[in-house]
Length: 214
Image (cartoon, rainbow, N blue to C red; front, side, top):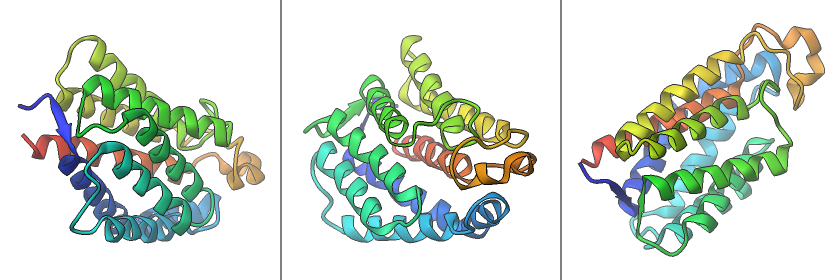
């Protein structure tokens, strides 16, 4: 199995993520209707559709341009908090990846870590706030751990997806401390965070795309 991913695999990832948020749009919106503005599914579906359309048949040849294109499109086409947060994720990933055509596991992990740092800088979220951070931080940590133990890129990203899912599920009992959900106080407990749910789809489709590229 290849130990690097090229731009074609990243495009496949983005396309798979578009398909996943479109398929799960109603579920994401249902989650958001309980503790937010009831628009997360619609926003993510619309935004990712715009991203795939923007990439088109002639995607950028380097990782930085490809990921920056994704980020800029999300910022300009997604409403609510999702656009700026997901846009920042991909913009920071692009800045860190650089003008290369392939990423190994360490470079992918570094790009995702930079993306997470960008989300934290923008949203000031911490563990336990009941946000997408609660899924993304464990996923990035798991990816780093995979790199440290010299796991292959496929195994490392699969571990990251599992960590994201566990982080997503951990948000259910939490009382929200950030975003619209925080207005509900104790009533926000008992509901899965929609942002953590979409981040889990992001990592699951990344692992699927890498497995499919072998």
